[in-house]
Length: 153
Image (cartoon, rainbow, N blue to C red):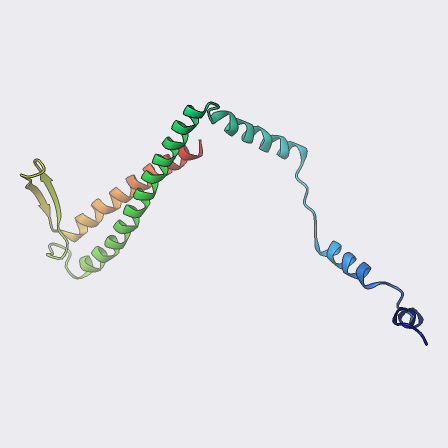
């Protein structure tokens, strides 16, 4: 009686299954090796970032607290920008029907203290309100980019 391995050898299939799987995997994986110059550049960038982090404990705590505060400000700015974008779309819809004055959107400027605020200026023109919001969005996005650079530094 022949065993299973002997039967496979007799049938002319002498390549073990493991070798077939390995060669198929090796053919499908292409190794992309970075050049020495690219690796040296990455090492230099990482060492520069590492040197930027303070070494003593109190300085490190202060450093990371500053980073944490910058991240908090960035998150708040991004949330405000999203809110403004939503309202800008709504204002564009209103401006399509009524381009001079509307009661749906009013931009107000108030002055005074905490308990005695007075309205100094009110704007009801949806086109002008849209322009103001667009300007604000540009400034918010510029500040967000600045904060991102500070966080990465």
